[in-house]
Amino acid sequence: MSIKKLFGTDGIRGTANHFPMTTEIAMQVGRAIAYKVKTENTGAGDKKPKIVIGKDTRLSGYMIEQALSSGICSMGVNVLLVGPLPTPGIAFLTQNMRADAGIVISASHNLFQDNGIKIFGRDGFKLPVAEEKQIEDFVWKGDLVNRLPTAAAVGKTMRIDDAIGRYVVYVKNTFPQALTLQGLRIVLDCANGAAYKVAPWVFEELGAEVIKLAVSPTGTNINDKCGALYPESVSKAVVEYRADIGISLDGDADRVILSDEQGQIVNGDHVLAICAQDMADKKQLSQNTIVATHMSNVGLEQFLKKQGIKILLTEVGDKYVVEAMRQGGYILGGEQSGHIIFLENSTTGDGLVAALRVLAVMAQGKKKLSTLRKLMVDVPQVLRNVRVTKRKDLHDITGLDTLVKQIESKLSEQGRVFLRFSGTEPVVRILVEGPSRDEINQAAEELANIIHRELA
Image (cartoon, rainbow, N blue to C red):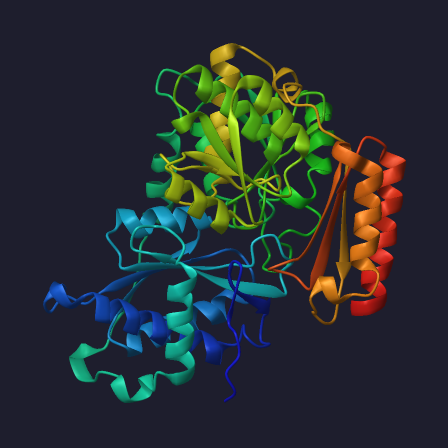
């Protein structure tokens, strides 16, 4: 078998039953992860290592789950199955249950035909690139078949029945004990995904009235015109039901987009602004700094500057945000797309924790979300996705660099252009910011045409 790259910017991802998301590859990845934890677990005596596996609600999750479990057990490692649970829930349980690794079967915000594998270390953090490469090497060159144990040395699979309850308690404990959600009406969209059970429980147990949307997964309707990529339906429902807030999660609930009581969308940049100011006012913001990405609206940077708060920008991807936070000792970071990380609570983005933090700010200050949303003023921004069939260095596309320079020259210091390949989909993402929406729309269209001509 020829050696191919398995891991992208957020684990392994692709169309289910096509490379790399086949059962054959999943079983080999399971063996590779199990072999890795076994070699790192030399001080545990005769006790077998254990790996937690959770998933979202995709139809293909069943076959991937069984393939991973088979590979792991064949290498003499035990498996703890928790069923559908948010990605941050698996990160939490990996630590909470003293497991040696955690695996999430999910393609996050993608539609049901895709699936993915994300891996957490025993500390609950996503594996660094070097360790992902180690697993790839085990898959392609490790000759693991000749290292398989026999008889009583093989592993077994157990189902953890109280996984949901453990995660619900953990999430609720991030909300101040002195506060309640009593009297609040929440519209909640669970994207027919991993949070369809846990999310309503969390908000209802804290006292809120919850109007539930997209909580009936069929295996094929995850993220289908619902969830964090389609917050407009929640915004309409908030106005219709006269709710106080709308909460839209994605398929694995590691990101959240909010809607205020007027039906206006509150994205990750605004959540960062709200929480950064609140934490800074309480002297809780480590080094008075947050971490965001190059996709964040420049309005966030302008707001933070007025508040005397610093911002560190990273590559796009919550993995890079967390890496920078850990290296610099920062505790708040995130992305415009809704990945918000509170490092004192979570090791990865958690949509439920982020929503509760904003609700706490609202309750403590007795402020409506529309008031908090206006803290930060967005600079007009256009985002375009150009679907491509091949990849090549964007700098090698004839005329693209010249056009970017021309656009940036026109925008001067009032705007910017940012281009990148997506790490999870076959698209090039185009971002243009500037004072005139007509001007930046035209610029984005011209950039998209060149990229489409060369790569579509």
